[in-house]
Image (tube, rainbow, N blue to C red; front, side):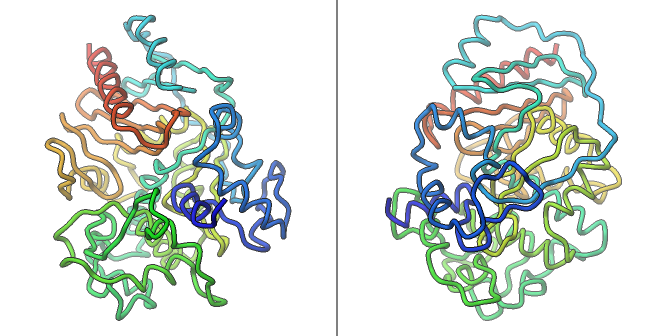
Length: 393
């Protein structure tokens, strides 16, 4: 396959493939060996075009194919007790699971499990890849870094933490504008265009010692004034990850473990893929259990007490950017939905959706037939809204 397909997979799914990067950290299940860049590139290039059987087989076992870091869980587990079973037609639920290629679906009400279903060979003991759901996890680490004093505020300039961006299109851009993808820097996220930024950003050779994301992003021109236009940019989430790593002097997997995984009580270790510089690609590709996805939604719903500053999640899950769809918006790497709901989403059907009014959290892991499809997304939102309504009673 052409190299640009690999780059698209890298950007969408953070699939690395250079030299010693193929040596995974703390994961005995990783099959790609150090130096096997050709094998890793081949697999990375094909991810977006896997068959349904390959998606079903690989989405729950990405650590067998790609290098990454382990997000360690602790000994304490945040309980998710059984609640009153959700009154919902079994036939409708079965049809949705089949039509959307759902592998796991869970609904929490007041922190209790009211519905939990698995399919496609998945189970409570497994993990499933997040794709861009990881963006919301990365946003939460910004909130933690502010609480810990590593970052003063989202009003600070990005160049304070990534000085290599001085003199680039990111001069004068704030952390908040990076979080809301309103930097004004020109970007093309078209995965079908071989010349798009998302396809090219990992193709160019990177000088020794330079971060591959920063090296590419600093060359992008400014299109509009910062704060004036929203454009979805996976590259900017990757910059957020670099910023957090620079501020905290810790790998993202380590910081996520210290701030959320262990103290909140995630049940299983998570797996986070890394880029050619051996840094977690913060825009994508955590592998997390279904219940721990739900716990992340619950953590955000509860406000992240003790981990982020008071009001952080209220602020970060509110609509700060107009995305051109009435009732919908974009916050600090979280999507804002009608009825005051918010959530995280990724390609192939990955979903966390939260309704603060009714204290309901929904998480879905899936292997959709296409990476992105408007009809699929509309049907998913309509069904999730039905689940919210049922859980509200």
